[in-house]
Length: 405
Ligand SMILES: [Zn+2]
Ligand SMILES: [Zn+2]
Image 1 (spheres, rainbow, N blue to C red):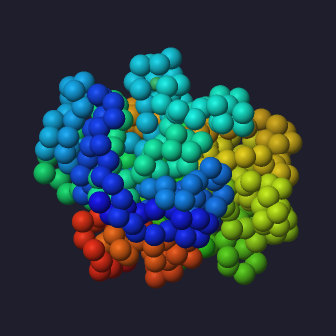
Image 2: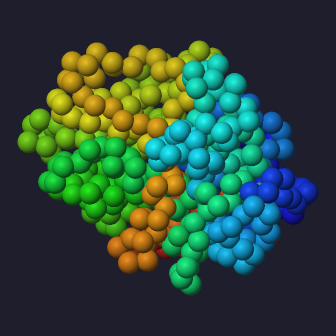
């Protein structure tokens, strides 16, 4: 089969590799009909996540049709169409039973490495380095899905693939980000970052009762989606003389937003002095993350407010304004998405037409286009907002006009 392989920092290639096979009786083999490139794939592409090995198959956002099932799989059969959550969970451990499936105790065979870094390991992830299990990802024509009865959710209608694909990660991730923001009816919520997770955090914040959502980014195509499709008030932080903190204060009766959601994560762009300091540090491997956005979130939130962090962080943060967090008595909630509990309720919202998650797709590509499009995505060229891949089409980039434009 053809698969997208990580071949070193900044290097992604399409290779012909062996088809996956059933290893455990609970496995499912999927023929991938749609997959996507995620913002967090860039952390791998840019070399910020350790323990990647040359030839690792990338991709954790995918869906497809069941090709083969292991002998213990009960809920799925050949021909079923499913979406697969990016976290791999056993469904049966202490954490899974509490719906904390991203913290599953049983699925990461390399837990020891994570335990050394973090104390305890989270669940395994598809296509996301060997510290997270070394599982082959779904930017490929076929993929092996462990725990076939636990993760994949069956699509019961003939709804288009691209309307349900993002249940694999970014929609639940944005939703959990909004849920973790502890929004009360009428609240003002600020969302840092209008990438795919940020856009879903905005729409989810409104669904959870926010009165006003303010979205911060610097790319016009993202700000346009945030404003025109998601209904946010937008701030372009790259504007001359723009002070995001002052703008947020002005938009929230002078006290600051009730909740702030960091949808940026470890590779924040940032323009201030500490951002430059972070860039040097990260380049010298003294610091693993550049927490510019997180610092601003902590600074911006009102006293007693909540900072929610769906953005990904990997290591030790330098110059984090923890004193501000303490001094203002804020709550911080974060973590990988507990995908499994959101799939059904969010799929029902899609069926009901409350949201069409495909609104953010800007490019539909074939598998041979993927290496170039990693660069386009990294550099935010060509008005890119989200890339989906048809792994059985060789090449040809379809540019979709966003519905907001
Ligand atoms: Zn993702
Ligand atoms: Zn578990």
